[in-house]
Image (tube, rainbow, N blue to C red):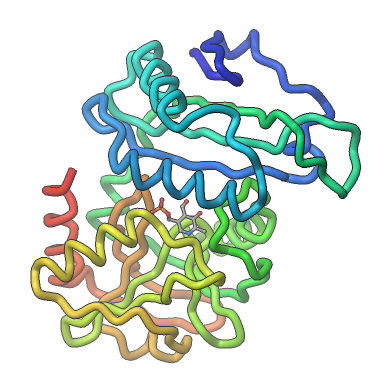
Length: 275
Ligand code: PLP
């Protein structure tokens, strides 16, 4: 298995990161995950743009040009002979003795690796159970930072209750899930939280909204309260790996179930066509 460290393509066991990398001490970095589909990076430009935006919001300098990054990612996929799977890549602020105050002159650290495709077929077909809990994260969820403690805590909580994903609410408003966005369907209209500082604006989310509108669905990007879950016809989560995955049941602070409905199924087909 080969990985990328800065500009080098290396066998994984030859790679090492300095202890003083700010990613290690502070989670001071940003990342992206792209789906590799038939050897191609799906929605590559959108993901690279989001990485640039996240880095900019944190004043993390890019280690090299976007063109160079793209070239490195493709060389990584080829070197690992990957046809289908995921590519993970991150930029951390760089290396300096531990100090909350960061310097602006650091050379940032780039890391990338590939992961085999996750088995999502069953989830996409039969849906998943989700755990409803408080959104305990910070107020800049729009930044795709590697500092994911709130997300990992609620994911563990969900798994401990035999749920595959945690969906969260902030003061009674559904925001998103620990590693995906949340959509509800009522009377063929789609509802999802607007792309504010309280959610990560998923690339999959954006593509779903585009495709749905193209095929005549109304999409309402407005905050909605937890109780609306009980009145929705269908619900699903979305991310790069899961694409569109139906929610079968909600447990936790509220309990309700959903059918794998016609709108979700239709959008799944339309989304696959995109790919
Ligand atoms: N929301 C959170 C918190 C995430 O971590 C992710 C992706 O992992 C998403 C939403 C979905 O984003 P995307 O569709 O770009 O994968």
